[in-house]
Amino acid sequence: MNKALKTIICLLLLGVIAFLAYANVKSIMEPVNFEKARAHREKVAIQRLKDIRDLEVAYKSSTGKFTASMDTLAMFYNDGKMDVVMQVGSADDSVAVANTERLKKTVRGITPQQMYERYLNGENLVFSIKNTVPVKDTLFHSRTDFNLDSLRYIPFSGKEEVEMDAVVRQVSGVDVPLFEAKMPYKKLLKGLDNQLRINLDADRRAQNRYEGLQVGSVTAPNNNAGNWE
Image: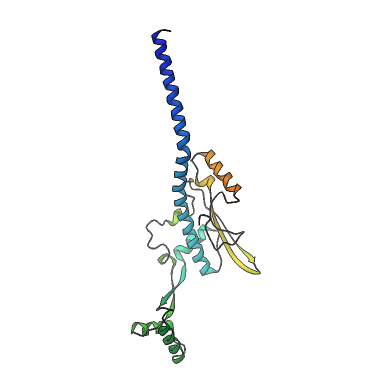
């Protein structure tokens, strides 16, 4: 075997070794990178589902029901109003409680606003005041990262919309409003390794869990909990 042929064979062997080493590292890192990207996407998605839940709960407190429409939630946020209860004084203060009961008996029909004036003048009282305020001035008003326009979309999905539903079901003979908002992994993890995503879905199904992120449920009342909680 001449020297030139030996050199070519050595180079080919080095190339094969380098390729096998790269393939080995790639097979190890792919699941690691997938889990890292999944964790990042889930963090963004969970915050979005929490915001949807906050809006749904506020909407229900105002209307008595949930909604499956993001347009309705957006309208409620922009133009709606909600009741906010402000607690004045401490219910654990027995003196304040006694003073308040005595005042209610002495001044029949006294309003919370009148009690508040007395409170400001130094009387030790405990009561609550209900105010009606615009939703926009109450929910998310201090959040710089809140974006109403993006709330309807599953992040990283190319503007696939959140899957939503709202119903009223009888639970123990009582009508109970329920809602759910879902982000399936098939859409949330779009663009990541598809086989690893398929494996994740299969693992979720084997555990009888939803293949994605979900808040609330229209089939099993869960106090509007998220499946990550």
